[in-house]
Image 1 (tube, rainbow over the protein chains, first blue to last red):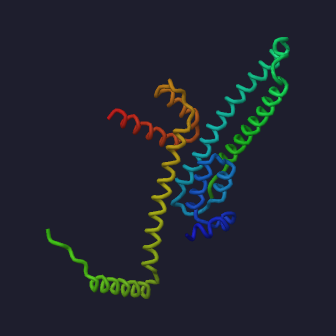
Image 2 (cartoon, each protein chain N blue to C red; image 1 turned 180 degrees about the vertical axis):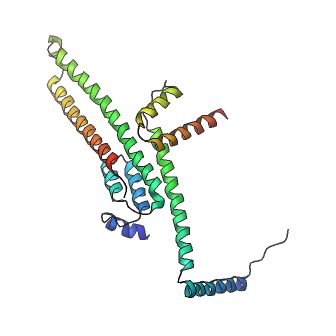
Image 3 (cartoon, each protein chain N blue to C red; image 1 turned 135 degrees about the vertical axis):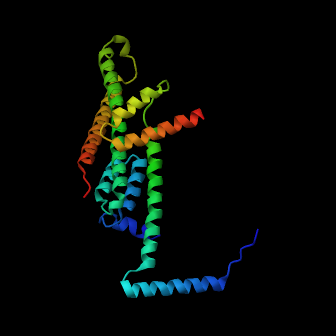
Length: 135
Length: 107
């Protein structure tokens, strides 16, 4: 109950025990909220007894970053292929009658930009996690 | 089998003796025994809880790896190796989980 009452207000101070932060980090990881997980992991300081657990959680976040990055990479490959096909075949006369080819291409390009952005963000988080060393 | 009876006066006497001993130890050594014991018990339960949570998260991560339906054991191992290049502890945990899974399947 104390945790529920004081947890959220005191979370940003970094004054709570390591285990509290680790629970919250794992909760964020379950929701693939990597940014929040990295932020909370940075705040967790505490007893030496939790060091190995802290390290395990850090490795878990790095691992999830890699899995998600790989997914984005596959999607980027797919979208780039689609855009290439679209540009190549869009000029053919039988394609002129298809519904809104330009809009479709724009949608592909927009999604591609978002995918690349997500991949870069995950790369940044992974880099941050590699440099975090526990005090 | 002899039936065990719980004695309320016995419990009260035990609690009183314990309380007296606690006060005596605190007076003589300055150490707070009961508080210390409660802290140790609390920390123990906390560690069990976090260990369980980390285990659950490890299983979830392993299940979250993108695997093709026709991938065999070796291919999955290679995939784990690729993703855990500099994460030795996590890799070890994954391998243990995989071995346990294979053993359970064979049993």
